[in-house]
Image (cartoon, rainbow, N blue to C red):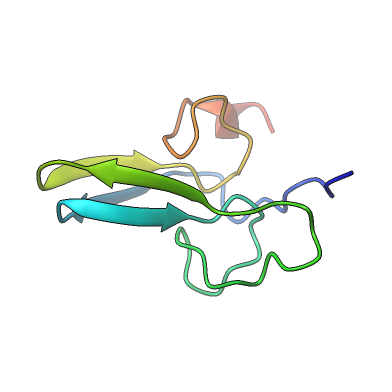
Length: 79
């Protein structure tokens, strides 16, 4: 059974990302938030791959409680 994710921050990461594949950290342990750096090993939580077809401004979840991973849904307001 996976461990619960660690809350990294109670605000989203607002970023301008290039088109292509990106790997969002779902465990909250990465030293390169909001992206995965492999620190999830042994947690049962893996990164979430998402692909952008165009350069896009995104709001990525940092509290790791979102119901729409990797994107912020406002869950940080209640955790």
